[in-house]
Amino acid sequence: MSEPGRVVDAHVYPIDIDGGPQLSAVAAVAEFLTAERLDDVVLVSRDLELLRTHVAASPRVHGMLWVDPRRSADLESAELALDERSVVGLKLHPGLDGIHPDDPATHAVYDLASRYGVPVAIHCGTPSGSPFTLPWAIERAVVRYPTVRFVLAHMGYCVFEFHEAAMQLAERRENVWLDISGMPHNWRVREAVDRVGAERVIYGSAAPWHHPRLEREKVRRSDLTPEEARRILGENAAELFLESPTREADR
Image (cartoon, rainbow, N blue to C red; front, side, top):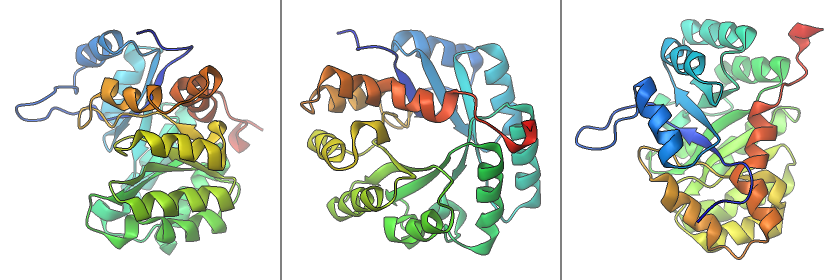
């Protein structure tokens, strides 16, 4: 079944899983784009050199740098990557990196995002076993930085209460987008559209951990209009990540 309009997978990891999918190589990502009928993909990695390699290989591949804000080298890499435009966004995983999303150390990341006009994706919900990934913790940063566009990656993931909290946060704050990767319920996609609008819900797969076609099936089975489906499957991510931002550094 063909998808309506442009399809952008806004959440993919260029990694190899032992005994599972292999996505670290440039050729593997190229094959992934073709096999999954994707127009563009956003790759998430801590490795800036790897992202540069992938981005240089294809105009359809875009980078998002995963940053630990307590590491000065990470912050330096983030500023360099943003300055050279080799990445289109920044990623935080407070659970794995063990830091509150509004810890003072994170403010340098949000300042960079504000300066360069790029979004910040934050892992939201379980699994990770950390209260730092819950919507209530993330909201403190969202409120502090109203001009930064925040993406709640996984929209709470596997827990009903966290889905609800993520949607409530997006209802309260217009600078919040909901990434539905790994969130297992198709009817929650319809609910998110009804509550925050189709313009702030985006498709991502979190491949290779999740299969992109299964993730798209949630969208297909969510009783969406063709226009709503187009926005979620590609137009929103294209606007959020891929269109050239107005940057302070260009002024």
